[in-house]
Length: 269
Image 1 (cartoon, helix red, strand yellow):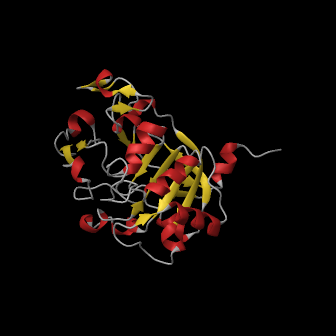
Image 2 (image 1 turned 120 degrees about the vertical axis):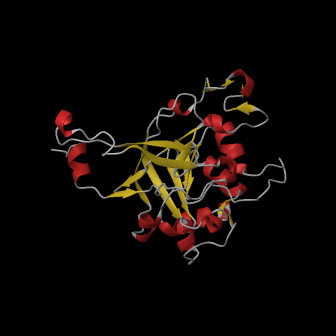
Image 3 (image 1 turned 60 degrees about the vertical axis):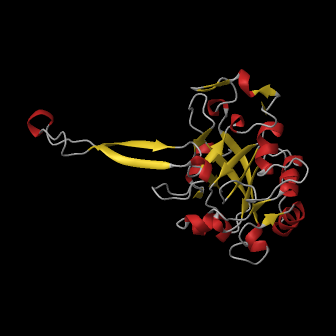
């Protein structure tokens, strides 16, 4: 008799791929102020043992950009020539309350096969050089070295090593990323989503000579190919255990019309 999914999960190893969230964590300049949390109701504020007995409660106020911490981009997050994925003109769906199409609530749970390409370790480095651009040739060579093949429908994760600098915003914002050829390589394999342990998947400051765009991956993957981008991942434990293929689960929150969502992705082996 085949074991049930529940039985398999009970014996599985789960890797938490989310970075901790806190005031002062790295934030992309376009998404400041980023993150703020404060207690709104404290236990002693409403403590009335004569009315409620010994029970008390606390709750807080959270203010954050969608694109802060570990998060996923909705397809409406980026446009190419003011057109979203599917050639949808932005003016036809953009409202003050969010997007009428392609908002984050339309993103189904990502549940499937994940692949880690640990480029930093493949290059025998703890951390890649700042602003280093990872090429298609390097992604392919890394995959060959690990003995994995990136397949259609996979979620492709790329490790630069910069997750270890999460406490240092200045250094983290200069993390290595994937260059244009690497982005094209990933899209050609039909991946469902990509992600990296950096702020934006892309190599920062790199400008595509053909389109003149920075963040080519954002220009190409979201509005032209319909491929999601997951940012600010922590891939250190996966890399330590040389776990290159795994079950991947990522659940965006259903913020209607929003351009992104915080997530807590996990790898299951």
